[in-house]
Image (cartoon, rainbow, N blue to C red; front, side, top):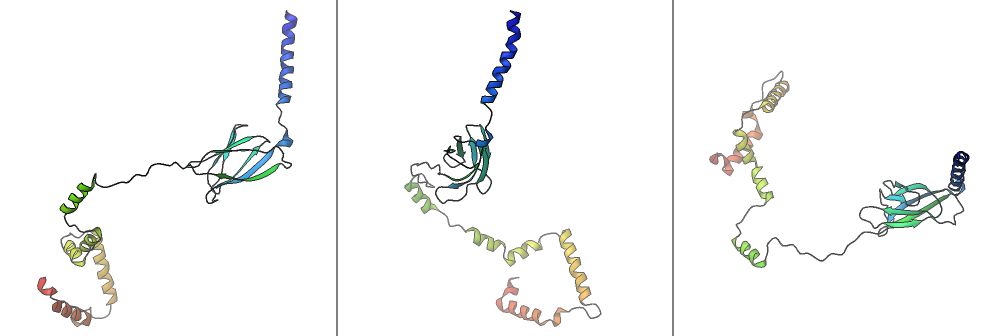
Amino acid sequence: MKKYLFLLPILLCGALKIYGQQKAIDSTKIIQLSGVVVSEIDLNAIPYVTVYNKTKRHGVISDYFGFFSLVSFPGDTLYFSNQGYNTSSYIVPDTLKENRYSIIHMLTRDAQQIQEVTVYPWPSREEFARYFVEMKPYEDAMRRAQRELSGESLAFVAARLDADASLASGNAYNQRNTRLYTNGQLPVNNLFNPYSWGKLISDWKEGKLSRQ
């Protein structure tokens, strides 16, 4: 009995060695498979496609331009999948003579036919007609923005705002520039400014002064 127990490890080692030799990878059959995944509709490259080798249980992801490259063997089954496209398969040919092979693989759109749906803002035509009759006139966003951003509206709002730090700083900055501009000469007097007189006369003719 002890004799047979001593021979058991030897027999196991021999069996494992034979099994390993059978499973040894033949490096002469390795194929560097490269390619580009494109759309069947417009032939544009599809980025980030999952390329999975089901036979060897490993895979890669294509880059932004749809390019991929992985090691495979003749007869391996590859699966190409991407969101929005139907998953397709590809079998590596077993008649290749070279260890490098390039392909262009096309994927089809995953389109599902659904019934046409018409969306109405009101449940029925009768309610739409009633709402249309009872509708009150309103201003669109463009006209409301033009009114709120007019010169009169901005001046009205500015006259009722307290001076903050930015306004005080801007006022001081303008005064300093005015002093630098009139350095060595008399300060600017708008009483002798023809543009100011012309604007005053124009406002007086248009009646703006009476409204103010």
